[in-house]
Image (tube, rainbow, N blue to C red; front, side):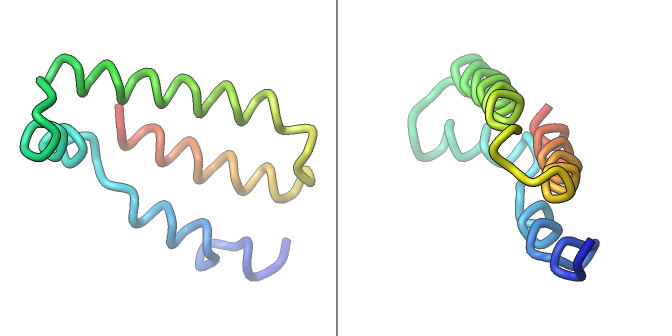
Length: 81
């Protein structure tokens, strides 16, 4: 694994910038006039679609990078649950 893929690499920086679940729900209510239920449904659908896409496209990514990506991806999705 290269240093760029390690804990201080770009994926870690991206994961650190992902908000928790509270932030997008507040944003949806405040700026998009979307109710809480609709915003929660949208987050859940997005998380499901993201997980399905990762699974379907994993054959296109080098295994070592996929392992790093999966860790960061799961952390980002967990923050939205």
